[in-house]
Length: 136
Length: 136
Image 1 (cartoon, rainbow over the protein chains, first blue to last red):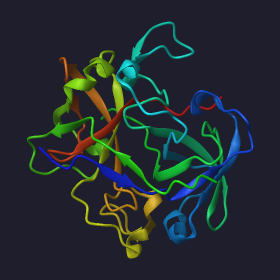
Image 2 (cartoon, one colour):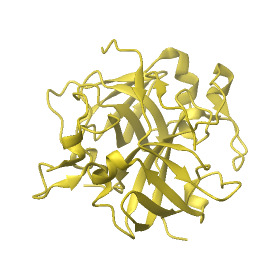
Image 3 (tube, chains in turn red, purple):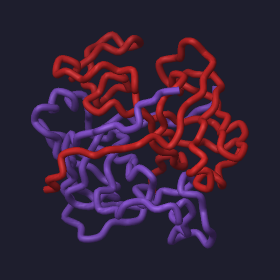
């Protein structure tokens, strides 16, 4: 067992989104916006290209602190109380979000994306290639 | 712009994996192991069921601190230097990992999984449903 009990992460950039509200999930979003990456990390996005799908890991920075009664929640589109680890609610023990976005274009440190479900100013923690699950 | 500069996360559980080494990525792994969830969070996994795919967000807890020269890296299976945000290397500005695993079975607070690419003792930060990217 690992005994380190907490981990500290710093944003690599922020979301720029002019929409006032966002859909509940990236899979039902058609919203466009930008991922503005801190200039010190720009070499890290050099291979991100238009039409790719990317996984963006971010903070739900507007979520209130988690409390035990949120371990089950009724999502807006499902008529049942679900365990928090089976839904995408922003109220989670660790307020970490994951969205799969389509890249529209990229300049030196700005990635223009589609399918945003993140609020303006959302801190971005990581970007990874999207890999689809396939049996083998 | 959000001015909060760091975020603190605590593990919700740990990986139990008897394999001494792991493949470079979940998509090429057939390893089985367990996600042992802290008992305080067991209600949160009540709806996770066998045969489902889940996204597991975790810490690369064995990675050394990140340094700028790692902004591009040559992955073991690709003959080119790639931007860190286009590859799945454990050496990242924030050492966050993401694996899509198949659930084999679940007891009260233990999820038995397949396709593990995480070392024994890896701290788990979050679990989410796997949602495939589809055009609409």
